[in-house]
Image (cartoon, rainbow, N blue to C red; front, side, top):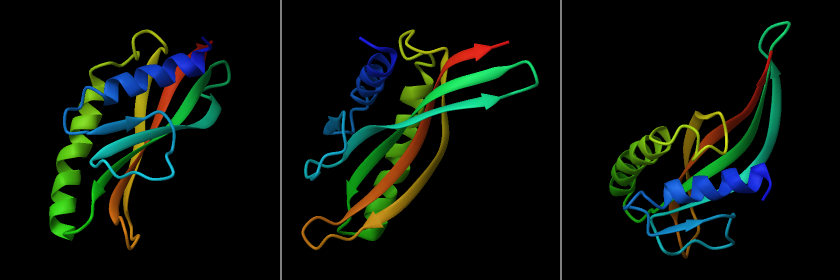
Length: 135
């Protein structure tokens, strides 16, 4: 198994520990109906020069959390509970079972997807798994 697949497998495993999630997808599904749910997709890699002699390589994912949006206030309250639980689950496993040096949640955004048949409130959390720090 390559490093990207191993990290991805561990991200899914961590998300599956969040009891509020009814479904966790290892891809971006065309339709999400069993809510609340989470999905992940690989968003590429980055190499960053930290100093003149130091470089960091990371693999990047976007984690999406979905809750039903029938009542805006209720959906926001549900997301305010779900996001910290996901952040804490990820924080509890910094090396994702030794598949990376450490991980960082870089940022998160919340937005509405207003589909007539399945409106959702969606949070996007940007996760970087640091795989190499060269000096």
